[in-house]
Amino acid sequence: THCHLDAPEFDADREAVVARARRAGVGQVVLPAVAPFDFGTVRDLAHAHGLSYALGIHPLYTGPLDEADALGRLRAALAAQRDDPRLVAVGEIGLDYFVPGLDPAKQERFYAAQLAIAHDAGLPVLLHVRRSADRLLRQLRRVPVRGIAHAFNGSRQQAEAFVIAGLLAPLGLMG
Image (cartoon, rainbow, N blue to C red; front, side, top):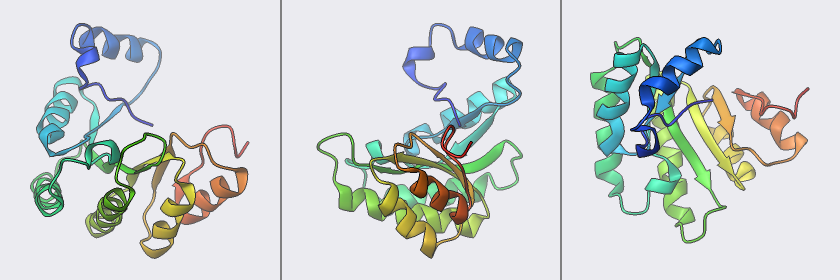
């Protein structure tokens, strides 16, 4: 669904990774942001390599962030880049109940706010779904968006509910 090509793990061979993907027939790659500090990086990388990007706040990064500030920065960045054809989604957003020590209530507030932001911007979402399918679906029923769910580990019925809600089916479950 996307690639965190901005991660430090790619510093040594980022150019080679993009070249290998193109040779393998990958037509497009979406680079999602994980927090406001990352917005400019993914945008710049997308433009430098002819890729696409998404702006959002990943659930693993919500802990230290001030909600009003981070969400305000997301709104401002989306407004500033609204005419950029390489901006294709709000993401990566969602809920992660797999990693211990994360604040589920804070994640849910970020998630709900970002769904509303995506809806208002008319953009799809890149949705992180780790042990959180039912909670994510509850919000998707309130705020209609389209997008892609990934890191999905739910049931076939949950996968079908994501499709009904407007998200592409997790691979392998809808065959």
